[in-house]
Length: 311
Image (tube, rainbow, N blue to C red; front, side, top):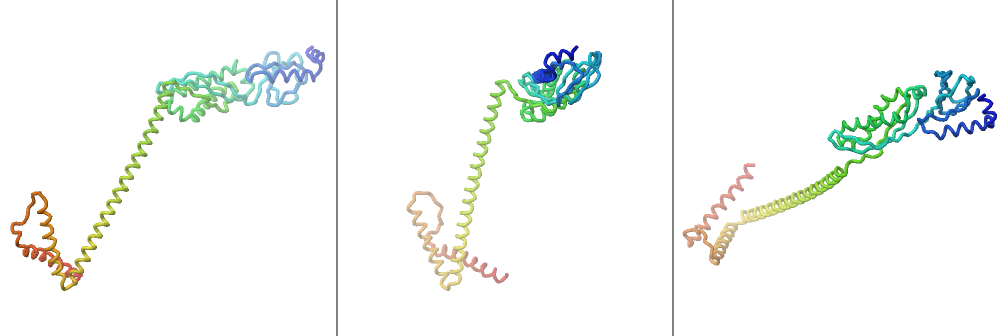
């Protein structure tokens, strides 16, 4: 009787068009429009047809030619074996540091066992969506807000593994899970923006202080080097003067004259100022002052002459 209805409706070509229209417009997990039972069937690629005989599961038709027993066999379920994306609605989740997040995602699944997908769960799409939501809330509850934002990839992997553990009894495998959007509360977003601004200001101040520090170090090093060079130049000049005086027969007389000249010049400057100073008791005894200075000069000269001999 079914075969006669097919022939009356326009033959196999007409039926094939009806079959493809009915299977391609259905949702991935929803019960598809079942093909009309005939003796000869052609199962499309990447589909599995579940056949029941007298109300009980009989077999699963693979892609290609299939033969049914009229009146006894019935195509009970048509399952697509292609990968499909399932939208996970937005939901609330609380992190371990008590921050409420609004999150949504997308789940990529595929049926690997048509028998379990047909008889293991009533509404596979609703079940997998609810499982994804509960798993997401569970995983989010174990992490802080910073970890959620920083380790999204690891969170996706954990959710995928948890879904696969539960969905294998339904004949469904979760290939991957992707969190689409994470929406923290407005006050948390404002706090995060302030934190980012503070961190940037802190880094700018650190860089500026490091610049001032390095500039001060460079300036001090320059001053140090200039003082050292000036001292070395002065010492070199004094050594050259001393060597010249020691080498000249009239060097002692020249030193005496220079000491006397500077002595007179210094006391002349003191007389022009109103400061209180300590001066020697016998100002008129210039000869003794010069003699003391020359005694010191003689000791230094003798020491310099002894050092080369000892070496």
